[in-house]
Length: 63
Image 1: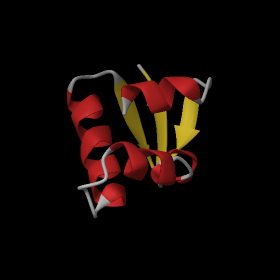
Image 2 (image 1 turned 30 degrees about the horizontal axis):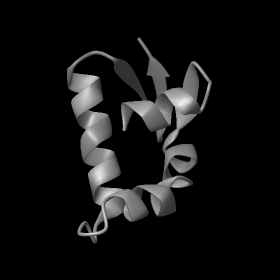
Image 3 (image 1 turned 90 degrees about the horizontal axis):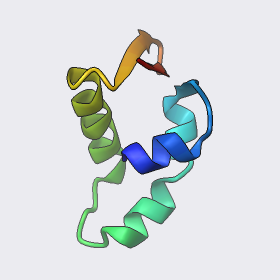
Image 4 (image 1 turned 45 degrees about the vertical axis):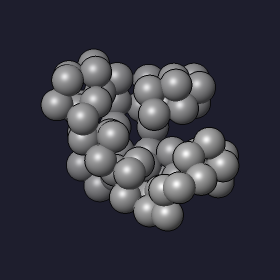
């Protein structure tokens, strides 16, 4: 997930921009049928590790 977020090439990004990569992530992890849920979970982990910061309303920023 961190690679996807970094690939966006932006300091601030939205959940919708990350969701745009859901198909590619689903191909990488074909057994996971809940890709959007996993995206949110991984963003929460990155937030807890203080790599990114949740700004509200689906907006994030690299710390």
